[in-house]
Amino acid sequence: MTGAQASGWIIEEAPAEAAAHLARLHGLCFAPLPETPWSEGAFRTILGMPTTFSLVARQDEDDASALLVGRLAGDEAEILTLCVAPAVRRTGIARDLLDTYFRHVGGQTKIVLEVAVNNVAAIALYESAGFLPVGVRPDYYAGKDRKVDALVYARRAAVV
Image (cartoon, rainbow, N blue to C red; front, top):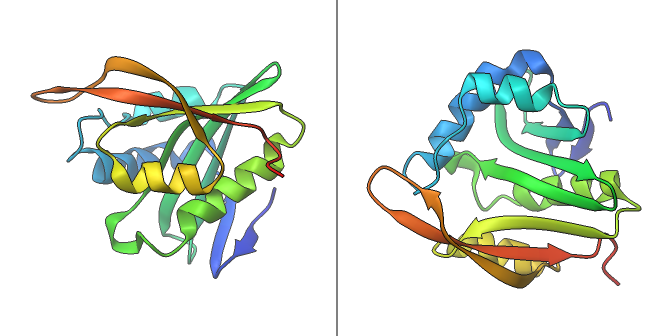
Protein backbone atom coordinates (compact mmCIF):
# COMPACT_ATOMS: atom_id res chain seq x y z
CA MET A 1 0.00 0.00 0.00
CA THR A 2 1.47 3.34 -0.98
CA GLY A 3 -0.39 6.41 0.10
CA ALA A 4 -4.08 5.73 -0.58
CA GLN A 5 -6.25 8.81 -0.17
CA ALA A 6 -9.40 8.58 1.93
CA SER A 7 -11.59 11.56 2.82
CA GLY A 8 -8.70 13.98 2.29
CA TRP A 9 -6.33 11.85 4.36
CA ILE A 10 -3.33 9.93 3.10
CA ILE A 11 -3.25 6.44 4.57
CA GLU A 12 -0.07 4.41 4.19
CA GLU A 13 2.04 1.80 5.90
CA ALA A 14 4.05 3.12 8.83
CA PRO A 15 7.80 2.86 8.23
CA ALA A 16 10.07 1.67 11.05
CA GLU A 17 11.69 5.13 11.07
CA ALA A 18 8.38 6.56 12.31
CA ALA A 19 8.62 4.80 15.69
CA ALA A 20 9.43 7.96 17.69
CA HIS A 21 6.60 9.95 16.12
CA LEU A 22 4.13 7.09 16.57
CA ALA A 23 5.11 6.74 20.24
CA ARG A 24 4.42 10.47 20.76
CA LEU A 25 1.05 10.16 18.99
CA HIS A 26 0.16 7.07 21.02
CA GLY A 27 1.12 8.88 24.23
CA LEU A 28 -1.02 11.87 23.30
CA CYS A 29 -4.00 9.61 22.69
CA PHE A 30 -3.67 7.16 25.56
CA ALA A 31 -1.97 9.05 28.41
CA PRO A 32 -5.29 10.31 29.85
CA LEU A 33 -6.78 6.79 29.69
CA PRO A 34 -6.06 3.75 31.82
CA GLU A 35 -4.10 2.20 28.93
CA THR A 36 -0.32 2.52 28.99
CA PRO A 37 1.04 4.26 25.87
CA TRP A 38 3.59 2.32 23.83
CA SER A 39 7.20 3.48 23.89
CA GLU A 40 9.41 4.20 20.88
CA GLY A 41 11.18 0.89 21.51
CA ALA A 42 7.87 -0.97 21.55
CA PHE A 43 6.93 0.60 18.22
CA ARG A 44 10.32 -0.33 16.71
CA THR A 45 9.78 -3.92 17.80
CA ILE A 46 6.18 -4.07 16.59
CA LEU A 47 6.93 -2.41 13.25
CA GLY A 48 9.70 -4.97 12.68
CA MET A 49 7.47 -8.03 13.14
CA PRO A 50 6.64 -9.82 9.87
CA THR A 51 3.03 -10.52 10.91
CA THR A 52 2.33 -6.89 11.88
CA PHE A 53 0.64 -4.37 9.61
CA SER A 54 0.76 -0.72 10.64
CA LEU A 55 -1.11 2.17 9.06
CA VAL A 56 -0.76 5.91 9.58
CA ALA A 57 -3.08 8.64 8.42
CA ARG A 58 -1.84 12.11 7.64
CA GLN A 59 -2.97 15.22 5.85
CA ASP A 60 0.52 16.40 4.88
CA GLU A 61 4.10 15.11 4.77
CA ASP A 62 4.93 15.66 8.45
CA ASP A 63 1.66 15.09 10.24
CA ALA A 64 0.71 11.53 11.16
CA SER A 65 -2.47 12.15 13.15
CA ALA A 66 -3.88 8.64 13.45
CA LEU A 67 -2.59 5.10 13.44
CA LEU A 68 -3.76 1.51 13.43
CA VAL A 69 -1.55 -1.46 14.22
CA GLY A 70 -2.76 -4.97 13.56
CA ARG A 71 -1.36 -8.41 13.03
CA LEU A 72 -2.20 -11.58 11.19
CA ALA A 73 -1.91 -14.99 12.82
CA GLY A 74 -3.17 -17.91 10.77
CA ASP A 75 -6.84 -17.41 10.03
CA GLU A 76 -7.25 -14.62 12.57
CA ALA A 77 -6.39 -10.92 12.50
CA GLU A 78 -6.07 -8.70 15.55
CA ILE A 79 -6.20 -4.94 15.93
CA LEU A 80 -3.55 -4.16 18.53
CA THR A 81 -4.14 -0.41 18.72
CA LEU A 82 -6.08 2.32 16.97
CA CYS A 83 -5.68 5.94 17.97
CA VAL A 84 -6.56 9.36 16.62
CA ALA A 85 -5.07 12.64 17.84
CA PRO A 86 -7.64 14.60 19.88
CA ALA A 87 -7.60 17.54 17.42
CA VAL A 88 -8.86 15.37 14.53
CA ARG A 89 -11.29 13.05 16.28
CA ARG A 90 -14.78 12.67 14.84
CA THR A 91 -13.54 13.35 11.29
CA GLY A 92 -14.06 9.78 10.03
CA ILE A 93 -10.37 8.93 9.92
CA ALA A 94 -10.66 6.05 12.41
CA ARG A 95 -13.31 4.45 10.19
CA ASP A 96 -11.10 5.00 7.12
CA LEU A 97 -8.22 3.25 8.91
CA LEU A 98 -10.50 0.35 9.83
CA ASP A 99 -11.77 0.03 6.25
CA THR A 100 -8.19 0.03 4.93
CA TYR A 101 -7.25 -2.64 7.45
CA PHE A 102 -10.29 -4.75 6.51
CA ARG A 103 -9.22 -4.65 2.86
CA HIS A 104 -5.69 -5.67 3.86
CA VAL A 105 -6.75 -8.73 5.87
CA GLY A 106 -9.18 -9.70 3.10
CA GLY A 107 -9.45 -13.45 3.40
CA GLN A 108 -9.05 -13.64 7.16
CA THR A 109 -12.07 -15.27 8.77
CA LYS A 110 -12.07 -13.32 12.02
CA ILE A 111 -10.78 -10.01 13.39
CA VAL A 112 -10.51 -9.45 17.15
CA LEU A 113 -9.65 -6.51 19.41
CA GLU A 114 -9.88 -5.32 22.99
CA VAL A 115 -11.31 -2.00 24.13
CA ALA A 116 -11.64 -0.45 27.58
CA VAL A 117 -15.19 -0.83 28.92
CA ASN A 118 -15.37 2.92 29.51
CA ASN A 119 -14.17 3.97 26.03
CA VAL A 120 -17.66 4.78 24.75
CA ALA A 121 -16.54 6.44 21.50
CA ALA A 122 -14.36 3.48 20.48
CA ILE A 123 -17.07 0.97 21.36
CA ALA A 124 -19.55 2.87 19.18
CA LEU A 125 -17.04 2.92 16.31
CA TYR A 126 -16.33 -0.81 16.54
CA GLU A 127 -19.99 -1.77 16.80
CA SER A 128 -20.82 0.42 13.79
CA ALA A 129 -18.08 -1.45 11.89
CA GLY A 130 -19.70 -4.82 12.57
CA PHE A 131 -17.81 -5.94 15.69
CA LEU A 132 -19.75 -7.85 18.33
CA PRO A 133 -18.77 -8.33 21.99
CA VAL A 134 -17.50 -11.86 22.67
CA GLY A 135 -15.92 -11.59 26.11
CA VAL A 136 -14.39 -9.57 28.93
CA ARG A 137 -10.81 -9.45 30.19
CA PRO A 138 -10.93 -8.31 33.84
CA ASP A 139 -8.37 -5.67 34.87
CA TYR A 140 -6.80 -5.81 31.38
CA TYR A 141 -5.70 -2.17 31.24
CA ALA A 142 -3.46 -1.05 34.08
CA GLY A 143 -2.95 2.68 34.19
CA LYS A 144 -1.36 5.00 36.68
CA ASP A 145 -3.90 4.57 39.46
CA ARG A 146 -6.53 2.05 38.39
CA LYS A 147 -7.30 -1.04 36.37
CA VAL A 148 -10.07 -1.25 33.80
CA ASP A 149 -11.72 -4.25 32.20
CA ALA A 150 -11.49 -4.77 28.46
CA LEU A 151 -14.32 -5.87 26.23
CA VAL A 152 -13.23 -8.37 23.59
CA TYR A 153 -14.84 -7.78 20.20
CA ALA A 154 -14.79 -9.89 17.04
CA ARG A 155 -16.11 -9.68 13.50
CA ARG A 156 -15.85 -11.56 10.27
CA ALA A 157 -13.50 -9.90 7.78
CA ALA A 158 -16.29 -9.48 5.25
CA VAL A 159 -19.50 -8.26 6.85
CA VAL A 160 -22.50 -8.77 4.57
